[in-house]
Image 1 (cartoon, rainbow, N blue to C red):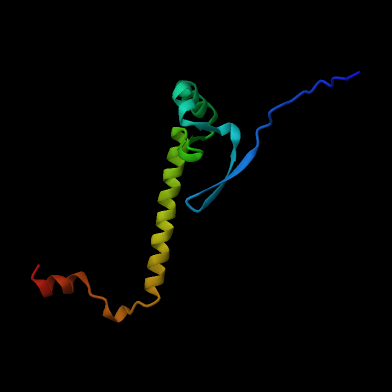
Image 2: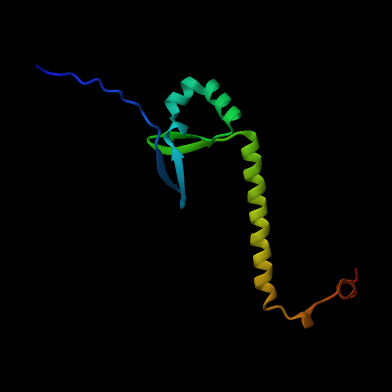
Length: 117
């Protein structure tokens, strides 16, 4: 007699590692979608991203082609990018100031006199 054992199979979302542009990201597979599937479910996926504030990774040929984020998240990312740019400028200025000779400074008045402005 063959005994049948009922199997209760659940698909468990897993976290995968994506390395893109030198950046490593942990991504929940539930937040990944193919371009073809996105075309069919665009309205619902836009609503999901907007409601959950969670990004959606769009795949083309099994590679990340785009990331859909909410307007709030996009705004935050742009602000962070601007702050990072300010830090980079600050570091550049500090590096240049180490070798600066203030005895060679020229005042605005000296420039006006020199060039007849």
